[in-house]
Length: 271
Image: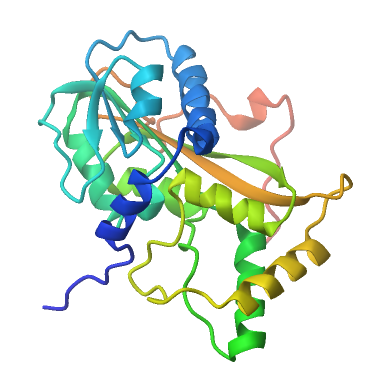
């Protein structure tokens, strides 16, 4: 039996999370604020929430909930919660569908899963500049930024995990920095630096980073004169199945024609 490829080095990720600073928590705070706004629109009171996060200092302040550390096997009891929030860690998961299945199993019937993770076009500017710089300077290329899931693919995981009424959408956030060096320092303070299993195991040469900063300033400078960095937050929501939930009608069971609803004339297709 072939072992599943490992994308992320859990030990490196834990080290990066541990050295994150309060200054670097703005992205976590933005995600927490958005999740709060979304939950305020749900006409349901949650009494037993849990949050899967590597940044308890942010999420515990935003929500009164059981805090569950990021791990391959989550410390969640079956059907113990009516709300589970998977907070900004799914993009590092070696088995994202497994993470969502574990969250779904922890939900009571008609419980809600709300997940938020980076995806889409996140850091596409830095990825392009580092890749070109490394190819120019060393003639090679090494993994530096985690591959980001697309909205459609991440949304499909909800159904695969057995969740009902799935919804997926994205919210891009563009941040300006003085230069690429400031961006890379910020990523370190966020705990979001390279934790890929296949990463280069020695420090990146200064020449590569200098060239990447030059390319960044050339191609991704805003009108303000500062560089821009994209963080694409993907939001996923789905419910644990329950008999009380709305269900699609059986095909062929409609009692009104679409032509009548549109107030139009129905005509047969030509042969």
